[in-house]
Amino acid sequence: MNYDIIRYILGLVIELEGILLLLPSLVALIYKENEGYPFIIVALICIVVGLISILKKPKHQEFYSKEGFVIVALSWIVLSVFGAIPICLNGDIPNYVDALFETVSGFTTTGASIASNVEDFSKCTNFWRCFTHWIGGMGVLVFILALLPMTGGYNMHIMKAESPGPSVSKLVPKVRDTAKILYSIYFGMTVLQFVLLVFAGMPIYDAVCTACGTAGTGGFGIKADSMASYSTIIQGIVTVFMILFGVNFNAYFYLLRTKNKKDAFKIEEVKIYFAIIFASILIITLNVLNRFGSVFEAFHHTAFQVGSIITTTGFATRDFNQWPQLSRTILVLIMFCGACAGSTGGGIKVSRILILFKSAKRELSYIIHPRIVKRIKMDRKVVDKQQVRGVSAFLVTYLCIFIGSLLIVAIDNFDLVTNFTAVAATMNNIGPGLNVVGPTGNFAQFSYLSKFVLIFDMLAGRLELYPLIILFTPAVWKKN
Image (tube, rainbow, N blue to C red):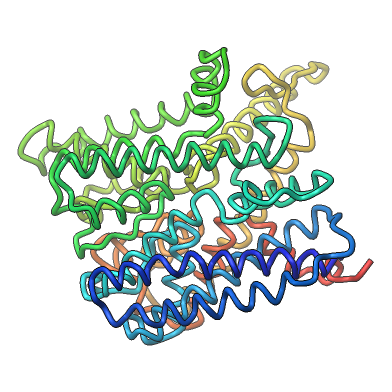
């Protein structure tokens, strides 16, 4: 284990967080809020601690997968621990455990909240909550890779550990250039949505917070009713961008940077992703039609909610907890499905589900034709055995953590639907669940034990399980 490189990169992360904490301080200055002072204090502490950590550069900069996974897991924990301090000190969330829950929910783009009324928060705190979504959406370490080159190509281990999906590939030969491309697309789409929201009549502050929450597919709202009080046009814009941020960013790369733009429309995962969305919207619209005044109104709110859940954003325009059982069941199912790999969305990912289905189909073929040679393909390319094995292992690990979390959370004695969807909503980085944790509810009533379990689930879900689990493996910490 190369401890020096871990210390050095964690120092960079802490320093970067210190710089980012100055933004909510600026918001507090604009709106003349005293709640901004803790942001300045913690920002300065982070910058100093970060600078001290990076004063001595590592003698050996080479590192491998285990260091990459440890760096990613510790970075997200450190980000959350420091990021929670200002909103605890300024009194908006005086309990540190609750502040940590809220901050982890922000960075992991979950959107699960302990707040009963977010409008009681200061504007700088609400901005920080939403901005953490944007930071965590593409990944803070991907951002660092875009700015600071690491020698020897070892940074690919970091990118693999932080980027969502069963596999991660470079869009261009250099990892740094890949990171730059991803963040350029991410930033460009965020700005485009912000401009459209402002033109649609949304106040600038609201538009910034909403664009950050949508881009990161996070879902923290700045109003008690989430997105319900905004106009139909604004809700429509958010619907479109939620779905777009759930698309594999490779598709946008093909559209913007390559000559073969048709390749963007041939990505199998993206096609299935849109098929699931359209099918879900159609069925739920028909199912809730009698609850709305017109077909358009039913379609509009259904499309918003399906886009919000499958991309794991978590915004709401209606209390879908009151919808018929069929509609609620479909929403819970697409919670697990999630968005595409290589997007800012959470969940199991469409690509993994595709591989699992194709793997099951292949096994069925072996039963019928034992001597057949059948390979699993995605986008006309053979999926190697290691990747198929990795998807199966991921599913087993996912189920083990899910069941373990569900059993612990059940100690609080809430009903099964509440417990099940609370774990599903946090582990898949969605935010709202059903019943007590529905769109009009929150997670405040859970015990400290359950909150720490759900914090673990949020981090595990965002980091694709293994980076967090590897921290508890003794063999990893042995010095080479």
